[in-house]
Image (cartoon, rainbow, N blue to C red; front, side, top):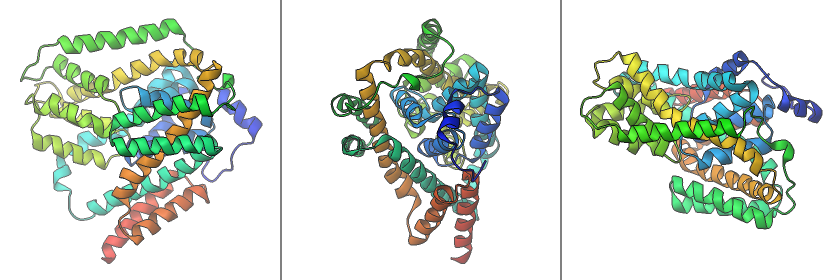
Length: 412
């Protein structure tokens, strides 16, 4: 409940092993899908608050390990984390419930609002968008503080975090994130010698190597099929599925990184005009939930002759599927790997590196895009206090930041 104190340690340990219903998972992720503004980096802050601090479905070690895995894989990292959390909580039904709850709100909003996005750049719309950027500032700052407390306990871990931050800033792209996490693993083996083997921190998956192999085979089959499909200026159901599957399978970093691939898939092929593509991208900035929901808009805009809902669903499922299959193929293997002593130290280093990555992302784009004036800083600071001090839910932070931004616009 909002404002409730953290669970005692023995209750928290029991909560980590508890099983829930798919209905419970769906309701939690539906609320997140309606309120998680700010893009994939901000989603990490929302998830950390909801599943580590409030509900104790994960601890900080599992959360950092899961984030490390998702950082290394192509696909939408926040949606992959959501799928895994649903899987841990309620099995396969929970995984599907988490995906549906987190994705449906933005997908439906994209279908309803993206077409009109180019006509909304007036009135209250800019203030609302700016307020949502300030929400991201407050949420990411809160998540960064919480993760740093748990994953950077000493100067050696802090050094790894600083190295990851520097690599991320200097590289300035998704490859920088991968290099930073990999370097964190290497440094962790040498510096984090006090890390214990996290036997109790393995992922609670209910399938083994055989299931993981099936998922990997499905991923490869889908990728080979999508590559072999002939290109055409006319959009077909199979062509749409293949184009969006390739985009989801080949993108590292998620979020904005997928845009060039999508542009190549739908604009260069002539399926969608450049103006329509940019209108959808603009609308996606205002939506909660995963940015990959832009695929629903683009799928609906293809001139395929098929029902709009059908092409939107095909594109949406195709872009998410490869990242999910890869994640499901890796999770059981990770459980075997993480039991080794050297792997425990590598994971500790990766966790510290993740804090550095989050700090880099907090500065740019979260801070640079959101805070431009002292008034912006004050609004974001109050939102941060609502989370950190008052322990209120993120929904109240959304309400405060948007209302404050609208108020400032009226006074200007």
